[in-house]
Image (tube, rainbow, N blue to C red; front, side, top):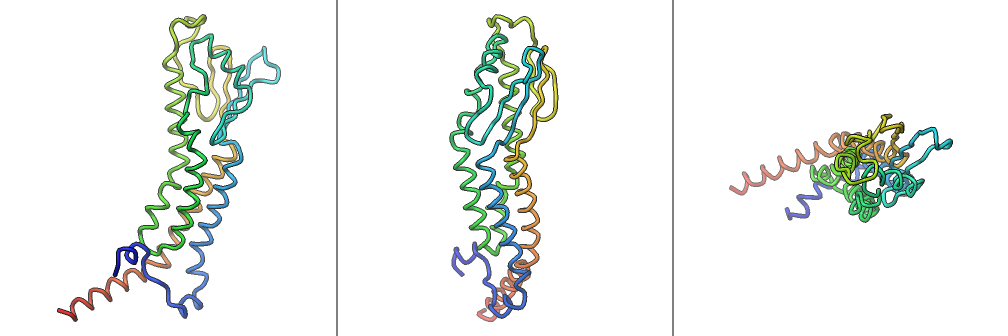
Length: 226
């Protein structure tokens, strides 16, 4: 058995495939659904924050896509300047620069995983499962870094204590109420993560017996050769 064969895992007998097409087809179909969800997530917002204050009747909105910021970014930066917070564009620059490529890579990894019948499929799938949590953790760290490191020389630096804006839910920063929400992109990525976990179960159910039989056959062959 070559290294590639070890990674790819056992092939399915054609007669067995015809008799159990649903069992062997389920993992690939679920991974296809996950790929579509991630592709759609590329084009919709991942996260948003609304700033509520009396002087803004329509409130201020910050919208984060996987690769750029939109909404009232300039106005929010102007307000943040007075309390000593850095411009929002300085946050997560690497993440926004390569975010699209990472999601495209996830789609490719899911495609490869659909052809792998061994436990190595988990290695390819694991980043997709953890991506929503990693996104929120990264967002929290940036929000914390910006909110806890205010410029002491800012005009209104003494009017507000260092803070960590909530990444989900509502909170208060001075006279502003902030309402943070998961965007459709993050929701789709989370659903994709759940679909991938379900796909892993069906993958194990379909291919684990084949891997076990392959190992038993290999062991028997070694014993016969000995």
